[in-house]
Image 1 (spheres, one colour):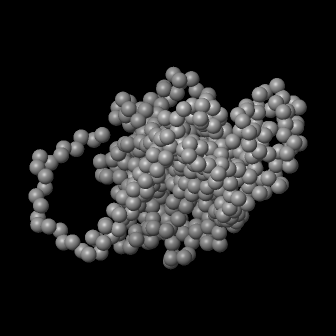
Image 2: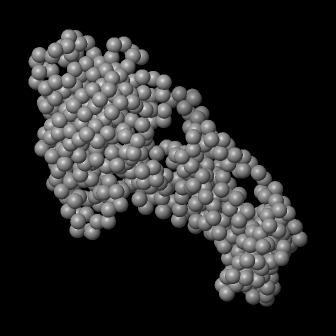
Image 3: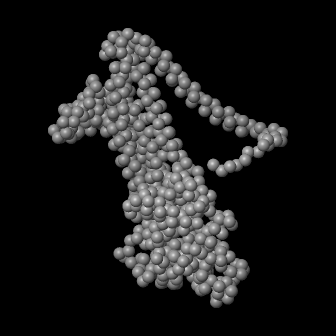
Length: 315
Length: 259
């Protein structure tokens, strides 16, 4: 913004700077690390594209479903997105609430204890969540689903209720529990970093505790919360075991509380062992589409965060 | 606007630590009162009790009375939030909200107090407050730019505009110029002079020349030794404090013999 005038000529170099072995070594190591991640990513992308290619040139009648790849893959994508979005919508407000409680409301000791419990939740393997969802959570949800279909049955989402509870909504709620810790942890960290000065500025203007949080803490933490949510969404999009165990899969349906629908990762996990030839290509192509979606979501999140970078307080 | 403050037998604690003992003083309306004294003597702490900002630090509490026009700010039924709406504060380091534009910063307090303002009324209030803080001409073409893009001195004046936008009775300033260059400091000092026609101003400063320049009355705080509570040594007209103080400790401090 300010008009700084650049020097007319670059400053003169006074000999070569001394090269210290430690610097050279460290620079080499960090450069190698940076490039290795690019290599790995490129490797995965090449694998996905080359293995998926046959399916795009194949006769539509030979693809599962008999109507080509697009009509095969879109119900999978739909299931994945619906499950992840429900999980995100359910988990984010709860996570932000927990994070605010821990950072700004709870007495220090209680806050630390709750933070620890949340971190423990992150350590539970997804297959355990899957078994818990299947055995414990799904049957308990059945009365709730029945109530939904009795009272809101006129909506396409709640037409008929499952009697096992193994539905896409159950899977979504379990996903919400699974992504809760990461969103909470990231949000808590950024909330704790709100400058004391800004909090006091709000309080000194006559803000109540909640108004102070709304004026100083939440705007400051917003990019972090978005980041945490995207990490959670990424996990939900890719989560395999829990969904594969809980969901009783089936063809596409708008109904969220009966068996039906399937997500991309679960579809791959359930069919990969027996797949060969074109079927294998289909699954890999589905993985490629998911890869593209995850990439898109991350770019979107970055754009959202950077859009108001000037107002972020980082300058 | 502008009220008189009476402090009676105020003791201030941080948990078990007795920070300031037995302060009694009167702060006149429509005047500038300066608190001076060495570091750690409790002058900022006393300042922060005048709008109940002291108690936002965990474990901090006070005993005694602070009366604003005979109403005790520390009475049981007094809400600290209401106190802070009447007693504005400007901090040592400029702290505009980084996520808000200049205009939003000025109006932050007003929107908090959940008054619904029409756009024209809000524009008018923003302009009036920024004019009151001598900042209007510098920022009028970039009201939607972030407040953090201004210079330090401008940011501090933005904070003053934010404080006066809610039309408080009293404005507290906690070393408002200590992070600023001399020219910005001069701008703030001029502004303090103008503010006293409408508000009661209390300023903490490390800079004795500044206290001499801007204040009508000066209170000198001191502490006997590190770890002991600070206390108000004497308070008098600024001219008297700097020419003929009644306590030897004050004389020593202002003549630079210690502190």
